Every structure is written in C-alpha cells, then in structure tokens.
Length: 317
Image (cartoon, rainbow, N blue to C red):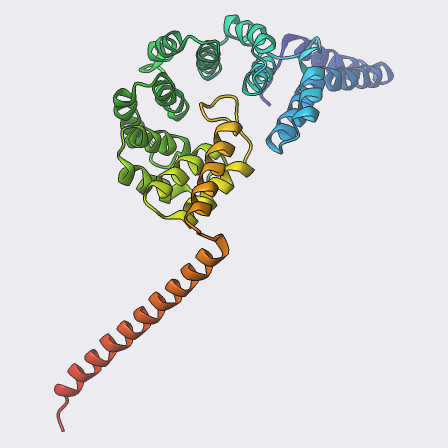
C-alpha cells in the first residue's frame, strides 16, 4: 500500500515508530508496534466478519451469514460498503424494514467511489419496487442509466419492466441490454422472459437453450419448462420444472416457490391423465437418440464411400 493512501493515524504511528527507533528507544518502539498491530486487527475486524458473511451467504448458509454481518455492522469501524452489503443481503431475504436504514445510510454517505454510489442507488430502486412502487424504482434507475451504463444496471432495469408488466418496453430494453452484454445470464433470462410474456416462445426457447445448463436461479428453468410443456415435450418440461423446484428462490423475483410447485404439480397431473410415465419417456428418448446416432453414423460412412469412389475414378493405371 502506498503511504499516501494510508489514514492519518497510520502515518503518525509509522512516523513515531521510526523516530523512536532512530532515537534509540527501541523498547518503546516495539511496544508501539505491538499496540499498532493489535489496533489494526481490531479496526479490520468488521471487514473480516463481512467477508466470512459473504462467503457463507454465497454458500447458502443464510443464518450463519447473518451472524457474521451483524457482528460487522455493529462494530465501530464498520465501513460504508459493509453496511450497504448487509442491507442488500437483508433486501434479498425480504427483510425490507431492516434493510432500509442500512441502504439509506449508505446512499447518503459522501464518497469518491462512483461505483459504490450508483450501486447504492440501484439498491434503493430495488427497495422501492419491493415496497410496491415500481414506477419510482424505474425512475430511479433511468435517472442514472446514461451515467452508469453497465450489466448490473441493465439487469435491474430490464427486470423492473417485466415486473411492471410492460412487456413491449421490457423487450426493447432487454434487447439493448443483450447487445451490451450477450454473456450475462441474467440479461439473457430477462430477454427470454420478455419474449415469453409476448408469446414468442421460439425466441425464448432458443435463448434458454444457450444458458439452461449453467444458470442456478429457478426462473430460467421455470419458464423454460413451461415453454417445453406448451410445445408438447413433456419429459424435458418435467426435468426443467423439477430442477426449478430444487433451486433457491430469491425475494427479488416475481416467481416464488409456490408458483413453481403449483406448475410442476399441474404438469404431473396432465401427464398422469395422458398416461405418460417419466421412466418410459426417458427410455423412448434414449432409443430415439441411439437411432439418430446410428443414422448419422451410416450417413457418414456413405459419404466416405462416395469420396473413395470419386478418388478411384481419377486413378491412373
């Protein structure tokens, strides 16, 4: 770390240590070093706890994560980004009243970090949406759209239009977002949902097929399963919806666990009424795949024979 980036207190202590050493007061210098190290550990305690909290939360250990975050934010040296992170985690868990003061405190803090500033604004937009004011949420994001054009902004803006039910506008924005970053799975899901709600199932299916093996959020599997169901692919629809039931739902979504389970049960009831057994369908698919592979193998051999025949025609005895 460069000295110019150190806090004033650190510079004073470091200067004091060097002065004591060069003045021959090594014992006092060592005591000061020890005290400084203890203070440094104490000052960085909230950062350490917040880091552990983030890791636990990403691993799915929400209760443990909350314990770490609470220790971090209640510490006297808790930094603004730690409080903001905790507020966002509370928001994701649906604890709006607890999240709001942390998010507002972070948003009101003066900072030179533009990313921190704009991320706090986006968090407040999400808070407004979950409190029932989607128009305010959209206005908040649109106010910073040109200043803070990145994938996170597009993820939130595109999904807010879906949550509002303005699917034409959602399609427009999510197409723009997709052009900005085709590799963002959330943006791809937003675009697929936009097509889905407009009844453009082929377009939605094509997008989902590109990400469905990688995404770990249930919405993509949920809508993909419904599309496959509508197209009569019962086995693939069953597998997609079953996957959706196994994934963790986020409070920051219009799809909840009850919706997924209800749709999955409806599919199973229809399959039962049509006497469609999952294991039988799997066997049929395996047989068709094997037949297709055999056809491709024979076609390849036929092409190779034709090439050999052509070569023989041009041979000179």
